[in-house]
Amino acid sequence: MRDATGQVTSTVRRTVLPGGLRVISEEMAGVRSAAVGVWVGVGSRDESATLHGCSHFLEHLLFKGTAERSAFDISIALDAVGGEFNAFTAKEYTCFHARVLDEDLPLAVDVLGDMITGSLLADDDVEAERDVILDEIAMHDDDPDDVVHNLLAAQAWGSDAPLGRDIAGTEESITALTADQVRAFYAEHYRAPRMVVSVAGAVQHDVLVAQVAEAFGRQGFLDGDDEPVGARAAEPWLPVTPGAASTTRPFEQVNVVLGMEGLGRNDDRRFALGVLNIALGGGTSSRLFQEVRERRGLAYSVYSFASSHADSGLVGVAVGCLPAKYDEVLATVRAELARVAAEGIDAEELARGKGQLRGGLVLGLEDSGSRMSRLGKAELVYDELLSIDEVMTRIDAVTLDDVRAVAAEVLTRPEVLAVVGPA
Image 1 (cartoon, rainbow, N blue to C red):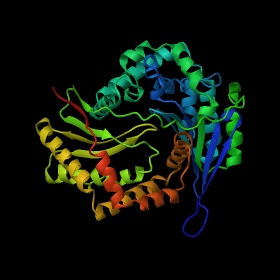
Image 2 (image 1 turned 180 degrees about the horizontal axis):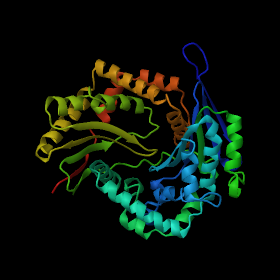
Image 3 (image 1 turned 135 degrees about the vertical axis):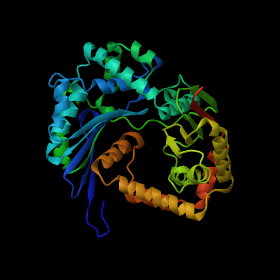
Image 4 (image 1 turned 45 degrees about the vertical axis):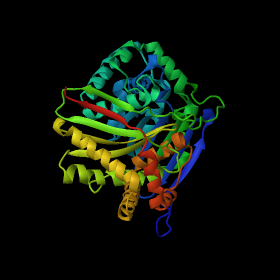
């Protein structure tokens, strides 16, 4: 990647190690930090009903100690050098990540390699962490935004379907999980061909590859000649089931999400949908913010979203309001969606949407952590890495007709409605 003067500002390189482990890096000029992530191609949608929550459970357990490091050793390793260290589980992948000074990158790589390949997954640790996860589930159950979006997913794809289930699991599923089940899940999914190590910042690729080979060479992890596992297949398409779902919670507000089936993540129309999403509810100048909050004073928070998977997607609008204003809020949102579906957006909204997408893209890549995430997702989830210039070109190419066509198709699809509020 080059700047406006032609100077090279970043270089992306990729290597496949024995065993199928992929290493991809972006060397960024003028930085003194590096971000490293280990991306594992397994998430909550890969669990059977009896293993619901196992991916997230396993994410926790990998911090509990190895033959070389205790849980405390892992905790202090990066704290001692001022590093950031964490992990998260999504529906289609799990990521363990760290951000450190460039000189401490070898340490971060070694700790991550040790955790991934050598975690003990001891019975005592499973039992101790079980209570932590149950507390986390209870915490999410007290968050209205989490509750309503989980309810939406359950309605859209089915509460017993992989995409429709909560990532963290339920009290019942976590209580029932055994240590042997967790260990078997780890052995099946935490394999080199299903992983990507991505690093961005002050990094030299050849040096990094050697460090990864050593750190992940433990336990025979890189033995064999397996090829990397490609991105998740997009077929068959998983349709969204329309309908309404509601539940009561002792909240002061009613939280509403009105959605409909969206686009898959590799759909060429995703850039037009991105512009449409911004015009609808992507900021304080958006239609929904102006109509629902500024003009009518119906709600403090209102926004639209577009989420996508390999084989399905959702678009929607989320609002939190007082119970007495629920009917008017829902009617206002529906009217605005119908107006955009019928008429599209105007030239000013198109320009503003493109500007927000471009600005968000570039500003989001100012730090090494964001670039590391972009690399990891591109390799693991998309099977391609578009350059910043390619993405900008695709955004710039979006026309009013493109947005109008997407709006007319998507926003007229049957509704999925989720509502959470007081009894």
